[in-house]
Amino acid sequence: FPFLSFTVAGLEPTSHYRMFVDVVLVDQHHWRYQSGKWVQCGKAEGSMPGNRLYVHPDSPNTGAHWMRQEVSFGKLKLTNNKG
Image: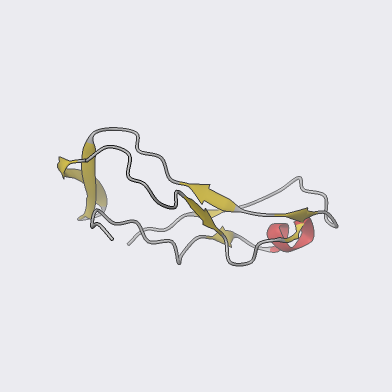
């Protein structure tokens, strides 16, 4: 399954930062990753209550930490399943 990862630059090395992903519904479809691409697989139910923000487990940390290597959100899992 694909995951998000970013190269970060331009931060103040000694300042502290939090990294997070904000998940927002952008269309009315469910999507599935299949055969190396995203395909529609049904209708979405609109905005679901709950946590939209996923905070990176290394947060907060210094700019030097975030710029040292790629920031990976490999533990973030998205699903079409409720609860």
